[in-house]
Length: 190
Image 1 (cartoon, helix red, strand yellow):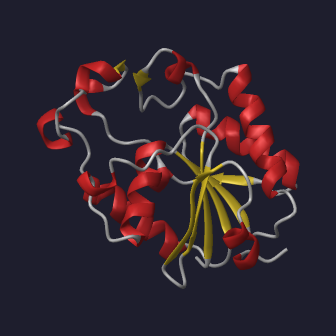
Image 2: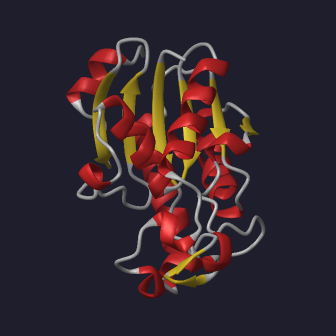
Image 3: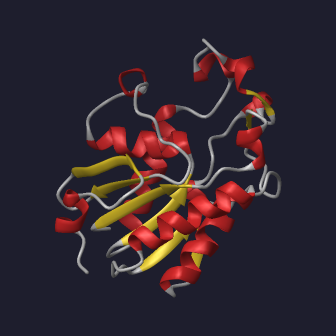
């Protein structure tokens, strides 16, 4: 992959309920989430890219579908950019996991997230939009900044924000932006 635009899904019912969930068919986008996805799609609709890849989770597929309609490119599903493996904490309140490590909670490791994204970056050739989730996106971006999980806690990947990486140059172009940044404009061909 050359350039990757990583987009977090729009607001979902899980976000409103403050839940973490890896369930494939639960928690669709809210109306606000649909509007957020439309807004981010408008931001990138003039870029030329080779494809759109979505996590298999409903909220990401719905976001990818909205982007796909705006740009006229179909999306594909790839489980390597799925939500974190949450173990016994799937569909639980975020407040129940506060202050505990992923290892203590029996969740998927940080390294697994980094490795999944490295696999996908190596599997595709060209420029892609990847619709995923907050923690996997933070892990992918952090790996290009040489930050571990603890060092990246301050990186906030908000709903329907985009983070961009020039994979071929190993350079982060933006993190958590809602608009096309000058770095992204310079790097991504129109």
